[in-house]
Length: 565
Image (cartoon, rainbow, N blue to C red; front, side):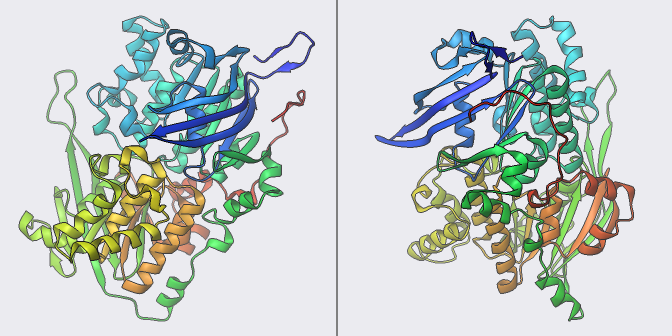
């Protein structure tokens, strides 16, 4: 709980004053965070929002002593429950981390141990901090995974990270953070990879912890709708500085700073972001011809053996069919594990279906050999859900985007580089980042590189597997505008896989809702959003955060002594 000073004033659980962080690389020093102040009381949720590169994640990592090589705190104080964290030795800091303060990292592919089962990684927290014995920790790990929203927690505890979907991996990270019952949770984009219903469950649980046990939450997010709905106070960062701070209602309803207003205007799903051109165009024509046709797709995966049993399979898709017309956008939505990403990989024949048929541009590619599929790769590209795993860590940004052009020998090197730089500019990646490698980029910057690479060959079909989950709202708006512009100019078709219903409403012509590997509802976008028929569709729409500009009033919290920001 928050204590009191000798003169009776309220002492916040976390008190940060004048925090400055710099990075030194190749002899050059960069100021990443400059003079940040923030406080968090026990039981309070404070959200830090801003664009990619604004310094919000650097601030979170600095609090925990987790800055990467070359990063260091150059000024300021970080006091947790009256103890100065910047003065602690490594041993004491490790005691604080995990038990008193827990971090939910942004990228589960990097943060999870790829050779250790998920349940063992959750149990490890209990063992390290002496909270349970080995046998008790293993049993508790399953309960904690269930608490974090993991389906079939006993089964998933035996899985390795690569056997889980992106959303399931994120839930595993949340379970690890919850294991020690910390007093402060630093959540760095904790729900960016989660579908709306699981996102709601996780955020509800964090709020329950905050309300019942006094756990404080520092929520780092680019999602203003989530921040507005869940935080007591919002801090807006830009260029490493705090440009606005205050109660959530005031920041979203009456923003004082122009930058805050720009962020609110860019929120997907806001009325000014709704897409109408393509739908009006479709109403005026007889409709385009099909480009991709999937019929009765079935996909079975073998399951790990348990208790001596073998030969079990998981049916990820069961009789799924859809059509993506030329120059149109079809969205697949559903909970994590519903089969969305499996459908995306089948569409590109990165997987071979157990049954069913796939046709691309009039050709049956269901059983096509790899030699014939090479031609398909040029006409159909994938934007991966996890850019860090999809980008070659040895190459610079320019080389990564140039690679498909070089492989298909499209033009000379000078022309290729000019095309690469134009693409990177269109996806809003600054020129000074072009020579960096993926490890030196933020999550949002890596996703922009992945999008540029997918667009390099001007494909006829782009399968977008959660392409915007790591991007802040302003870059989301720019990328969505770019995708629509390219569709209008080049007639590109998109198969759009996402859990973000606000993005779906903005970009999609048609929506298909998946549950447990089956399509439960489909139809034109506006009809599905305004008159959903299936109960699962209604549940997804109900769980979706509303745009911050139309934020509902939060229940009033008990008054507490005023604190400086």
